[in-house]
Amino acid sequence: MINNIDWVNRRCNYGRLIGDSINATRGSGTECLKILQDFVFMKLNLNLMWTAVCSKNYASIKSNLRAGMKISGKLDQFFYRDNKYFQVTFFSITKKIYLQNKA
Image (cartoon, rainbow, N blue to C red; front, side, top):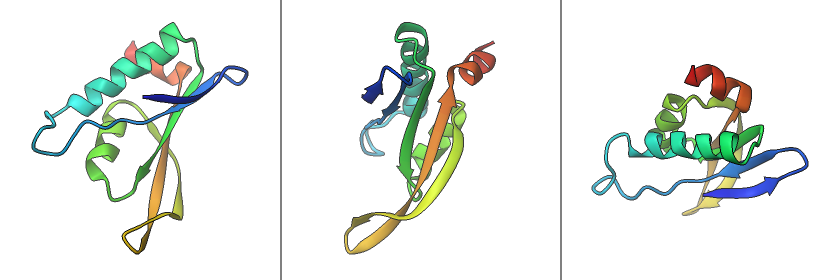
């Protein structure tokens, strides 16, 4: 899902919810992200897309990296759940990098 489209700066963030590990097909998150990247860059003509992932969500981190996303940074204690604070890892990709990866 694409969120917060900023038409002036031509960027958006995104999120994915594929399902639990029992229902998720191997590689479906990566494939979903590649289709989303194509839509964002080729149809909407945006220049940057980004996301934030809980640093303990290893499957999502691997999926983002396989789809060409780059780690842009990390923030400690970014959100609070179940009486704990969690770190997030930020990922981003520009249209230029997307096109280079696609070639």
